[in-house]
Image (cartoon, rainbow, N blue to C red; front, side, top):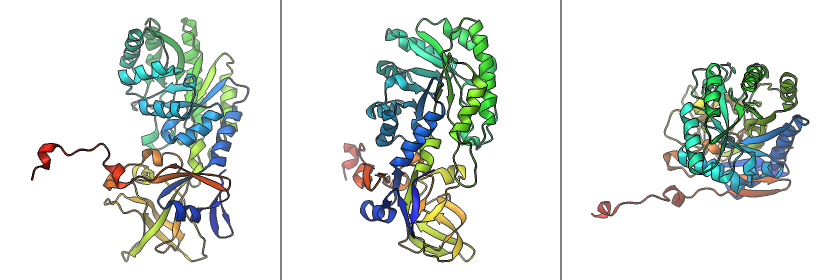
Length: 420
Protein backbone atom coordinates (compact mmCIF):
# COMPACT_ATOMS: atom_id res chain seq x y z
CA UNK A 1 0.00 0.00 0.00
CA UNK A 2 1.18 3.51 -0.77
CA UNK A 3 -0.23 6.99 -1.25
CA UNK A 4 0.90 7.64 -4.83
CA UNK A 5 -2.19 7.70 -7.03
CA UNK A 6 -3.79 9.36 -10.03
CA UNK A 7 -6.52 11.95 -9.80
CA UNK A 8 -7.96 12.01 -13.27
CA UNK A 9 -4.76 12.10 -15.36
CA UNK A 10 -2.38 13.60 -12.77
CA UNK A 11 -0.11 11.66 -10.40
CA UNK A 12 -0.36 12.77 -6.77
CA UNK A 13 1.51 12.02 -3.57
CA UNK A 14 -1.21 12.11 -0.93
CA UNK A 15 -2.95 15.42 -1.75
CA UNK A 16 -0.08 17.12 -3.57
CA UNK A 17 0.29 17.01 -7.37
CA UNK A 18 3.69 15.66 -8.34
CA UNK A 19 3.89 18.22 -11.19
CA UNK A 20 3.69 21.01 -8.60
CA UNK A 21 6.67 19.55 -6.75
CA UNK A 22 8.65 19.43 -10.00
CA UNK A 23 7.78 23.07 -10.65
CA UNK A 24 8.70 24.29 -7.16
CA UNK A 25 11.55 21.93 -6.16
CA UNK A 26 12.96 20.89 -9.54
CA UNK A 27 14.16 17.52 -10.74
CA UNK A 28 15.51 15.02 -10.05
CA UNK A 29 14.01 14.72 -6.58
CA UNK A 30 13.05 11.99 -4.16
CA UNK A 31 9.45 12.30 -2.98
CA UNK A 32 8.26 10.45 0.15
CA UNK A 33 4.77 9.96 1.55
CA UNK A 34 4.57 10.56 5.31
CA UNK A 35 1.29 8.66 5.56
CA UNK A 36 2.80 5.61 3.84
CA UNK A 37 5.90 5.62 6.04
CA UNK A 38 3.88 5.89 9.23
CA UNK A 39 1.37 3.23 8.16
CA UNK A 40 4.04 0.76 7.08
CA UNK A 41 5.96 1.07 10.34
CA UNK A 42 2.81 0.73 12.45
CA UNK A 43 1.64 -2.28 10.42
CA UNK A 44 4.95 -4.07 10.88
CA UNK A 45 5.17 -3.26 14.59
CA UNK A 46 1.57 -4.29 15.28
CA UNK A 47 2.09 -7.62 13.51
CA UNK A 48 4.32 -8.68 16.43
CA UNK A 49 1.96 -7.44 19.12
CA UNK A 50 2.02 -9.78 22.10
CA UNK A 51 5.63 -10.84 21.49
CA UNK A 52 8.38 -8.92 23.32
CA UNK A 53 10.10 -7.14 20.47
CA UNK A 54 11.94 -4.05 19.24
CA UNK A 55 11.59 -2.83 15.67
CA UNK A 56 15.02 -1.45 14.74
CA UNK A 57 14.68 0.31 11.40
CA UNK A 58 17.52 -0.53 9.00
CA UNK A 59 19.28 2.81 8.57
CA UNK A 60 21.15 1.71 5.45
CA UNK A 61 17.91 1.60 3.49
CA UNK A 62 17.18 5.29 4.05
CA UNK A 63 18.96 7.41 6.65
CA UNK A 64 17.29 10.81 6.18
CA UNK A 65 16.77 12.39 9.62
CA UNK A 66 13.11 13.23 9.01
CA UNK A 67 12.28 9.68 7.96
CA UNK A 68 14.09 8.10 10.90
CA UNK A 69 12.33 10.61 13.18
CA UNK A 70 8.94 9.26 12.09
CA UNK A 71 9.89 5.82 13.39
CA UNK A 72 11.61 6.99 16.57
CA UNK A 73 8.42 8.86 17.52
CA UNK A 74 6.57 5.54 17.32
CA UNK A 75 9.04 3.84 19.64
CA UNK A 76 11.23 2.39 16.92
CA UNK A 77 14.91 1.71 17.28
CA UNK A 78 17.65 1.55 14.67
CA UNK A 79 19.90 -1.04 13.07
CA UNK A 80 23.17 0.70 12.24
CA UNK A 81 26.35 -0.36 10.42
CA UNK A 82 28.60 2.68 10.88
CA UNK A 83 29.46 5.50 13.23
CA UNK A 84 27.80 7.88 10.79
CA UNK A 85 24.52 5.97 11.02
CA UNK A 86 24.77 6.05 14.81
CA UNK A 87 25.23 9.83 14.66
CA UNK A 88 22.19 10.16 12.39
CA UNK A 89 20.05 7.89 14.58
CA UNK A 90 20.85 9.89 17.70
CA UNK A 91 20.19 13.19 15.90
CA UNK A 92 16.81 11.82 14.81
CA UNK A 93 15.90 11.10 18.43
CA UNK A 94 16.31 7.33 18.50
CA UNK A 95 16.71 5.99 22.04
CA UNK A 96 20.27 4.57 22.16
CA UNK A 97 18.94 1.69 24.27
CA UNK A 98 17.04 0.63 21.12
CA UNK A 99 20.02 0.68 18.75
CA UNK A 100 21.86 -2.42 17.54
CA UNK A 101 25.19 -2.18 15.74
CA UNK A 102 25.75 -4.67 12.89
CA UNK A 103 28.41 -4.91 10.17
CA UNK A 104 31.67 -6.78 9.62
CA UNK A 105 34.18 -3.92 9.90
CA UNK A 106 33.57 -1.99 13.13
CA UNK A 107 36.70 -0.06 14.10
CA UNK A 108 37.85 0.54 17.66
CA UNK A 109 36.76 4.17 17.25
CA UNK A 110 33.28 3.09 16.11
CA UNK A 111 32.98 0.75 19.10
CA UNK A 112 34.10 3.43 21.53
CA UNK A 113 31.53 5.90 20.16
CA UNK A 114 28.74 3.32 20.41
CA UNK A 115 29.69 2.29 23.96
CA UNK A 116 29.83 5.93 25.06
CA UNK A 117 26.37 6.43 23.52
CA UNK A 118 24.90 3.50 25.48
CA UNK A 119 23.56 1.40 22.63
CA UNK A 120 21.65 -1.81 23.31
CA UNK A 121 23.90 -4.36 21.65
CA UNK A 122 26.66 -5.10 19.14
CA UNK A 123 26.10 -7.87 16.59
CA UNK A 124 29.65 -9.28 16.45
CA UNK A 125 30.70 -10.96 13.22
CA UNK A 126 34.15 -12.47 13.87
CA UNK A 127 36.42 -13.71 16.64
CA UNK A 128 38.76 -10.76 16.11
CA UNK A 129 35.89 -8.32 16.46
CA UNK A 130 34.83 -10.03 19.70
CA UNK A 131 38.37 -9.55 21.05
CA UNK A 132 38.36 -5.88 20.03
CA UNK A 133 34.99 -5.32 21.69
CA UNK A 134 36.37 -6.76 24.92
CA UNK A 135 39.53 -4.64 24.73
CA UNK A 136 37.73 -1.36 24.05
CA UNK A 137 35.10 -2.02 26.73
CA UNK A 138 37.85 -2.83 29.23
CA UNK A 139 39.74 0.35 28.40
CA UNK A 140 36.53 2.34 28.96
CA UNK A 141 35.69 0.42 32.14
CA UNK A 142 32.40 -0.71 30.61
CA UNK A 143 30.74 -3.97 29.58
CA UNK A 144 29.75 -4.39 25.96
CA UNK A 145 26.51 -6.27 25.37
CA UNK A 146 26.93 -8.50 22.35
CA UNK A 147 25.15 -10.98 20.15
CA UNK A 148 27.13 -13.15 17.79
CA UNK A 149 25.88 -13.12 14.23
CA UNK A 150 25.61 -16.70 13.10
CA UNK A 151 25.50 -17.78 9.50
CA UNK A 152 22.93 -20.59 9.08
CA UNK A 153 23.90 -21.37 5.44
CA UNK A 154 20.39 -20.93 4.10
CA UNK A 155 19.65 -19.93 0.51
CA UNK A 156 17.22 -16.98 0.60
CA UNK A 157 16.57 -17.21 -3.17
CA UNK A 158 17.34 -13.56 -3.82
CA UNK A 159 19.95 -11.60 -5.79
CA UNK A 160 23.50 -12.85 -4.98
CA UNK A 161 24.63 -9.36 -3.96
CA UNK A 162 21.95 -9.13 -1.24
CA UNK A 163 22.19 -12.73 -0.05
CA UNK A 164 23.92 -12.70 3.34
CA UNK A 165 23.26 -16.07 5.00
CA UNK A 166 25.21 -18.52 2.86
CA UNK A 167 28.54 -19.91 4.02
CA UNK A 168 30.36 -18.20 1.14
CA UNK A 169 29.09 -14.77 2.25
CA UNK A 170 31.33 -12.46 4.31
CA UNK A 171 28.82 -12.09 7.13
CA UNK A 172 28.69 -13.83 10.49
CA UNK A 173 30.22 -16.97 11.99
CA UNK A 174 29.44 -20.46 10.73
CA UNK A 175 26.64 -21.83 12.89
CA UNK A 176 28.64 -25.06 13.32
CA UNK A 177 31.39 -23.08 15.07
CA UNK A 178 29.05 -20.81 17.00
CA UNK A 179 28.98 -22.74 20.31
CA UNK A 180 32.77 -22.63 20.55
CA UNK A 181 32.79 -18.89 19.85
CA UNK A 182 30.06 -18.25 22.43
CA UNK A 183 31.97 -20.15 25.10
CA UNK A 184 35.14 -18.16 24.38
CA UNK A 185 33.25 -14.86 24.41
CA UNK A 186 31.49 -15.74 27.67
CA UNK A 187 34.90 -16.00 29.37
CA UNK A 188 35.87 -12.43 28.48
CA UNK A 189 35.46 -10.07 31.44
CA UNK A 190 34.19 -7.02 29.61
CA UNK A 191 31.46 -8.65 27.53
CA UNK A 192 27.84 -9.43 28.31
CA UNK A 193 26.96 -12.21 25.88
CA UNK A 194 23.21 -11.77 25.68
CA UNK A 195 21.98 -12.46 22.15
CA UNK A 196 22.04 -14.27 18.83
CA UNK A 197 21.88 -12.41 15.54
CA UNK A 198 21.03 -13.72 12.09
CA UNK A 199 20.35 -12.06 8.73
CA UNK A 200 19.97 -14.24 5.66
CA UNK A 201 19.35 -11.71 2.89
CA UNK A 202 17.24 -8.92 1.48
CA UNK A 203 14.11 -8.76 -0.71
CA UNK A 204 12.83 -12.18 0.38
CA UNK A 205 9.41 -13.03 -1.04
CA UNK A 206 8.56 -16.15 0.98
CA UNK A 207 8.60 -16.86 4.71
CA UNK A 208 10.12 -20.34 4.40
CA UNK A 209 13.80 -19.22 4.55
CA UNK A 210 13.03 -17.24 7.73
CA UNK A 211 11.34 -20.26 9.30
CA UNK A 212 14.21 -22.56 8.30
CA UNK A 213 16.73 -20.19 9.87
CA UNK A 214 14.64 -19.86 13.02
CA UNK A 215 14.56 -23.63 13.44
CA UNK A 216 18.37 -23.72 13.49
CA UNK A 217 18.58 -20.75 15.85
CA UNK A 218 16.21 -22.41 18.34
CA UNK A 219 18.49 -25.43 18.54
CA UNK A 220 21.49 -23.17 19.09
CA UNK A 221 19.71 -21.26 21.88
CA UNK A 222 18.86 -24.51 23.66
CA UNK A 223 22.46 -25.71 23.42
CA UNK A 224 23.84 -22.42 24.72
CA UNK A 225 21.44 -22.30 27.63
CA UNK A 226 22.45 -25.81 28.65
CA UNK A 227 26.03 -24.52 28.69
CA UNK A 228 25.02 -21.74 31.08
CA UNK A 229 24.99 -18.91 28.52
CA UNK A 230 21.85 -16.83 28.99
CA UNK A 231 20.41 -15.66 25.65
CA UNK A 232 17.92 -12.83 26.13
CA UNK A 233 17.74 -11.33 22.62
CA UNK A 234 17.18 -12.94 19.25
CA UNK A 235 17.90 -10.61 16.32
CA UNK A 236 16.21 -12.00 13.21
CA UNK A 237 17.46 -9.19 10.98
CA UNK A 238 15.36 -7.82 8.14
CA UNK A 239 14.94 -8.85 4.53
CA UNK A 240 11.18 -8.97 3.98
CA UNK A 241 10.56 -8.04 0.35
CA UNK A 242 8.22 -5.64 -1.41
CA UNK A 243 6.45 -5.54 -4.77
CA UNK A 244 8.57 -3.89 -7.43
CA UNK A 245 7.00 -5.67 -10.38
CA UNK A 246 5.06 -8.93 -10.06
CA UNK A 247 6.46 -10.18 -6.74
CA UNK A 248 3.96 -11.29 -4.11
CA UNK A 249 5.85 -11.00 -0.84
CA UNK A 250 4.19 -12.05 2.42
CA UNK A 251 2.35 -9.46 4.47
CA UNK A 252 4.03 -8.62 7.81
CA UNK A 253 1.14 -10.41 9.55
CA UNK A 254 1.99 -13.63 7.69
CA UNK A 255 5.67 -13.23 8.52
CA UNK A 256 4.94 -12.53 12.18
CA UNK A 257 2.53 -15.47 12.35
CA UNK A 258 5.16 -17.85 11.01
CA UNK A 259 7.74 -16.54 13.49
CA UNK A 260 5.26 -16.78 16.37
CA UNK A 261 4.38 -20.38 15.52
CA UNK A 262 7.99 -21.51 15.12
CA UNK A 263 9.60 -19.62 18.00
CA UNK A 264 7.35 -20.23 21.02
CA UNK A 265 9.84 -18.71 23.50
CA UNK A 266 8.32 -16.01 25.69
CA UNK A 267 11.56 -15.34 27.58
CA UNK A 268 13.25 -13.89 24.49
CA UNK A 269 13.00 -10.36 23.14
CA UNK A 270 12.91 -10.33 19.35
CA UNK A 271 14.85 -7.68 17.48
CA UNK A 272 13.60 -7.04 13.97
CA UNK A 273 15.43 -4.93 11.38
CA UNK A 274 12.97 -3.99 8.61
CA UNK A 275 14.11 -1.46 6.03
CA UNK A 276 12.88 -1.97 2.48
CA UNK A 277 9.45 -3.21 3.59
CA UNK A 278 8.90 0.08 5.46
CA UNK A 279 10.33 2.66 3.06
CA UNK A 280 10.60 1.01 -0.36
CA UNK A 281 7.16 1.79 -1.74
CA UNK A 282 6.89 5.02 0.27
CA UNK A 283 9.16 6.94 -2.12
CA UNK A 284 9.61 7.75 -5.79
CA UNK A 285 12.36 9.36 -7.84
CA UNK A 286 10.89 12.22 -9.87
CA UNK A 287 12.66 12.96 -13.14
CA UNK A 288 12.15 15.02 -16.30
CA UNK A 289 12.74 13.98 -19.91
CA UNK A 290 15.62 15.90 -21.48
CA UNK A 291 15.73 14.32 -24.93
CA UNK A 292 14.40 11.38 -26.90
CA UNK A 293 16.40 9.59 -29.59
CA UNK A 294 16.30 6.54 -31.82
CA UNK A 295 19.21 4.38 -32.92
CA UNK A 296 17.10 2.78 -35.61
CA UNK A 297 16.96 -0.42 -33.58
CA UNK A 298 16.20 1.01 -30.17
CA UNK A 299 14.32 3.94 -28.66
CA UNK A 300 15.93 5.97 -25.86
CA UNK A 301 14.33 8.35 -23.40
CA UNK A 302 17.04 10.49 -21.80
CA UNK A 303 16.06 11.84 -18.39
CA UNK A 304 17.79 14.10 -15.86
CA UNK A 305 18.05 11.35 -13.21
CA UNK A 306 20.90 8.88 -13.52
CA UNK A 307 22.69 5.92 -12.00
CA UNK A 308 24.29 8.24 -9.45
CA UNK A 309 20.77 9.01 -8.18
CA UNK A 310 19.42 5.45 -8.30
CA UNK A 311 22.04 2.76 -8.83
CA UNK A 312 19.90 -0.33 -8.20
CA UNK A 313 19.01 -0.98 -11.88
CA UNK A 314 22.68 -0.73 -12.94
CA UNK A 315 24.07 -2.60 -9.93
CA UNK A 316 21.49 -5.36 -9.47
CA UNK A 317 19.49 -5.27 -12.69
CA UNK A 318 16.58 -4.28 -10.48
CA UNK A 319 13.13 -3.46 -11.81
CA UNK A 320 11.50 -0.13 -10.97
CA UNK A 321 8.17 0.73 -12.55
CA UNK A 322 8.19 3.93 -14.63
CA UNK A 323 4.98 5.94 -14.60
CA UNK A 324 4.12 9.17 -16.39
CA UNK A 325 3.26 12.03 -14.08
CA UNK A 326 0.55 12.97 -16.54
CA UNK A 327 -1.26 10.28 -18.51
CA UNK A 328 -2.08 11.40 -22.03
CA UNK A 329 -3.56 8.37 -23.71
CA UNK A 330 -0.70 8.34 -26.20
CA UNK A 331 0.47 5.04 -27.62
CA UNK A 332 3.03 2.98 -25.77
CA UNK A 333 6.51 2.26 -27.02
CA UNK A 334 9.35 0.04 -25.88
CA UNK A 335 12.33 2.14 -24.81
CA UNK A 336 15.40 2.35 -22.57
CA UNK A 337 15.12 5.02 -19.87
CA UNK A 338 18.67 6.37 -19.55
CA UNK A 339 20.50 9.14 -17.75
CA UNK A 340 23.22 11.68 -18.69
CA UNK A 341 26.16 9.81 -17.12
CA UNK A 342 28.98 8.73 -19.40
CA UNK A 343 28.49 4.98 -18.85
CA UNK A 344 26.60 2.41 -20.88
CA UNK A 345 25.42 1.07 -17.53
CA UNK A 346 23.58 4.31 -16.80
CA UNK A 347 19.96 3.23 -17.14
CA UNK A 348 16.84 3.22 -14.99
CA UNK A 349 14.90 0.77 -17.18
CA UNK A 350 15.64 -1.31 -20.27
CA UNK A 351 13.28 -2.40 -23.01
CA UNK A 352 10.41 -1.00 -20.99
CA UNK A 353 6.94 -0.46 -22.41
CA UNK A 354 6.01 3.11 -21.50
CA UNK A 355 3.68 5.84 -22.65
CA UNK A 356 5.32 7.99 -25.33
CA UNK A 357 7.24 10.70 -23.48
CA UNK A 358 8.57 13.90 -25.00
CA UNK A 359 11.25 16.37 -23.86
CA UNK A 360 9.92 18.25 -20.83
CA UNK A 361 7.55 15.48 -19.69
CA UNK A 362 7.81 14.20 -16.11
CA UNK A 363 8.17 10.58 -15.06
CA UNK A 364 8.10 8.83 -11.68
CA UNK A 365 10.51 5.99 -10.95
CA UNK A 366 8.46 4.00 -8.46
CA UNK A 367 9.42 2.03 -5.34
CA UNK A 368 12.58 4.11 -4.86
CA UNK A 369 12.30 4.84 -1.14
CA UNK A 370 14.79 2.13 -0.10
CA UNK A 371 18.42 2.09 -1.23
CA UNK A 372 17.77 5.07 -3.48
CA UNK A 373 19.16 8.26 -2.02
CA UNK A 374 21.15 6.32 0.58
CA UNK A 375 23.22 4.71 -2.21
CA UNK A 376 23.46 7.83 -4.36
CA UNK A 377 26.76 9.50 -5.21
CA UNK A 378 28.34 12.50 -6.91
CA UNK A 379 29.69 10.49 -9.85
CA UNK A 380 30.33 12.73 -12.87
CA UNK A 381 30.28 15.62 -10.34
CA UNK A 382 26.50 15.58 -10.26
CA UNK A 383 24.91 17.26 -7.23
CA UNK A 384 22.70 14.86 -5.33
CA UNK A 385 18.94 15.20 -5.61
CA UNK A 386 16.61 17.01 -3.23
CA UNK A 387 14.46 14.97 -0.84
CA UNK A 388 10.89 16.00 -0.14
CA UNK A 389 8.31 14.70 2.32
CA UNK A 390 4.61 15.12 1.59
CA UNK A 391 2.12 15.14 4.45
CA UNK A 392 -1.48 15.57 3.38
CA UNK A 393 -1.70 18.76 1.33
CA UNK A 394 1.67 20.08 2.56
CA UNK A 395 5.21 19.29 1.54
CA UNK A 396 8.58 19.86 3.20
CA UNK A 397 12.09 19.79 1.75
CA UNK A 398 13.90 17.39 4.09
CA UNK A 399 17.21 17.61 2.23
CA UNK A 400 18.13 20.54 0.01
CA UNK A 401 19.42 19.85 -3.46
CA UNK A 402 23.21 19.96 -3.49
CA UNK A 403 24.96 22.86 -5.21
CA UNK A 404 28.20 22.98 -7.16
CA UNK A 405 29.79 24.52 -4.07
CA UNK A 406 28.76 21.42 -2.10
CA UNK A 407 30.68 19.27 -4.57
CA UNK A 408 34.05 20.76 -3.62
CA UNK A 409 33.47 21.35 0.08
CA UNK A 410 36.54 20.11 1.95
CA UNK A 411 38.78 20.08 -1.11
CA UNK A 412 41.88 22.28 -1.30
CA UNK A 413 44.51 23.05 -3.90
CA UNK A 414 47.88 23.04 -2.10
CA UNK A 415 50.04 26.16 -2.39
CA UNK A 416 52.68 24.51 -4.60
CA UNK A 417 50.00 23.89 -7.28
CA UNK A 418 48.82 27.48 -7.23
CA UNK A 419 52.03 28.72 -8.78
CA UNK A 420 51.87 29.37 -12.52
